[in-house]
Amino acid sequence: MLSLDQLAIGQRAIIDALEATGPLLQRLLEMGLLEGEPVEVVAVAPLGDPIEIRLRDYRLSLRRAEAAGVRVRID
Image (tube, rainbow, N blue to C red; front, side):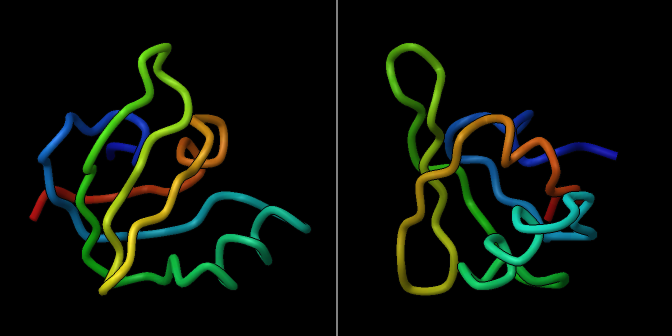
């Protein structure tokens, strides 16, 4: 199974699971990263961190370490 940080720019996927724990899990949930939500990688910073994703009607920037805890399946 892929993680969100492994997707290429323009690639779409569906969130399958959140593997984070504690405060990071709570933060991801509060930002709207829920199982079953579609996401799309919009941009990656020049040095590769952070990545920008489209989630619902907004864009969200995540560190690669945070995105690695989000398991996705290709749409």
